[in-house]
Amino acid sequence: MSPLKPFYITTSIAYVNGVPHVGFAMESIEADVLARWARKQGRETFFLTGTDEHGSKVAKTAKERGILPQELCDENSAEFQKLGNALTLSNDDFIRTTDKERHWTSAQKIWEKLAENGDLEKRAYTAQYCSGCETFLTEKDLVDGLCPFHKVAPETVSEENYFFKLSKYSQEIAELLRTDALKIVPDFRKNEILKMAEEGFTDVSFSRPTEKVSWGIPVPGDLSQTMYVWCDALTNYISALGYGKEVEPLHATALPFQKFWNSGEVVHVIGKDILRFHAGIWIGMLLSAGIKTPDKIFVHGFLTSEGEKMSKSLGNVVDPFLEVEKYGTDALRYFLLREVPVGRDADFSRQRFEEIYQAHLANGIGNLSSRVHKLCERNSVEPLHATALRDDFTQIIAKTEKTVTEKMDAFLIHEAIQELFLVVDFCDKRMDEEKPWLANEDGTVKMELMKSLLITLRWFAMELEPFLTNTAQKMKNMFGDNGEPLGEGQMLFPRLEKLA
RNA sequence: CGCGGGGUAGAGAAGUGGCAUCUCGCAGGGCUCAUAACCCUGAGGCCGUGGGUUCGAAUCCCACCCCCGCAACCA
Image (cartoon, rainbow, N blue to C red):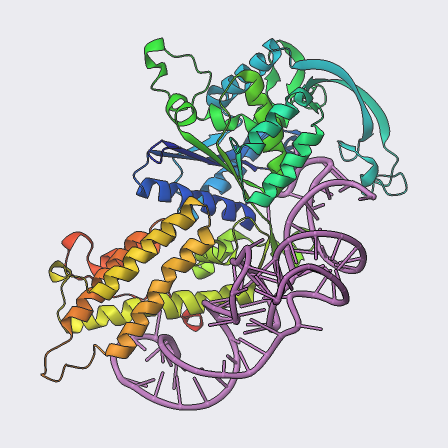
């Protein structure tokens, strides 16, 4: 719990059978802010993201396109890494589940641990299978007993799978949740998953016959079976840290796994759809394998698009690349961080996005930066000489720092950023009332106020860094970070009508 | 009676017993350093509905209505 513990934060890994989605952008940005915040607090931090690349869907898509599954994975994984750059993510690593060297060894190691512990058992499994979809269907999928896509009755198929005995860990998991040893944020998600745990989880299928699904990690010691997503994908969180890697005993303590997993604070950032897997299956696996369980799971909601569910068929999926291209990285970051209440569902509305951009970014911090910069330039106020801060500014800075810290510690990102931006209002108000563009009655300029404004904006840039990294850097250039002279003035956020 | 979340101004949120708050939008006024930006004022709420507890309820209790998730790898 010590705030100086190393900090390990992960996003869920994106499935590569498609291109990046604005929801993935939101999750990555939230994780990025928490990672940058931790670093700013002086904590040694490791931020991981990556891609989930196995399974029949990928194999099928590759086949349709006439390329190898690995080629498809390479192509799409690259898109996600490209998005990471576009969003200025500060991830320390990027793990891919097709990475045999790094990932497979860890995943197989965990599998062996579960097996040694007697928690994996081969069972016959019977279900309805549609050969058109190449997947199992449940009663609810069927329309009049037929596959809704192929209009044929599914066949009853029986196959052997390894099952993980998750049910036996239900109560232990419930206890972790109850005591917050595994803390779920926000609270209401905890209640939800705790209920499920108390009612008991069912055992889960952990493998598929290789003849049906071969694009995956082979089950150790049984080539007739391929790992199903759980042991394959969830294990990325520790494979990236080198779990199970053969090293000289002397070097074992140097493994990131040792530092960040065993001795650090571990936080997973995920969407509400996969909470069950993370708080259930993943924790069960770790308990079985005798590995420390994570400290926190931070669950975000979903975005709708103009009030409707985002779906390919409706054609309303928001492409994060296009948003970044049009409005800029920090505008998208700001909207997702400020307008989406942490943990809840929200709507991605074009009009709302533009209103927020105009009001907070262009008219707010952008305009304030311009007016302060011009004043300083005109009156030769140099950063080097701006050392003394007026009391009222000192007070608001102290108060803001305190509140922002409290909010961030509680993962209330949207409230933290809201609090921070109140400083913009404060500065605008001070200028309006004291009119620093007019001289004092004795003809002298209002130097004290101008210096305070300059210092405050320089401070603001520092506070802003975890949230809007690019803008923070631009502000530092404008207002002379580290005693540099006043830089060039620039428009941080041009008004919308000036955007192409 | 499957499980869970939610219903507070046009929109999004805060508020868990004591004058209903913030952001955006809207209307009027002021200023002119600034990106026609900024500042002030105002309009706009039976706090989902009906009962109850209390000196006092958005807040606690009971009943009901309506939205939304989950139960199945959609971020």
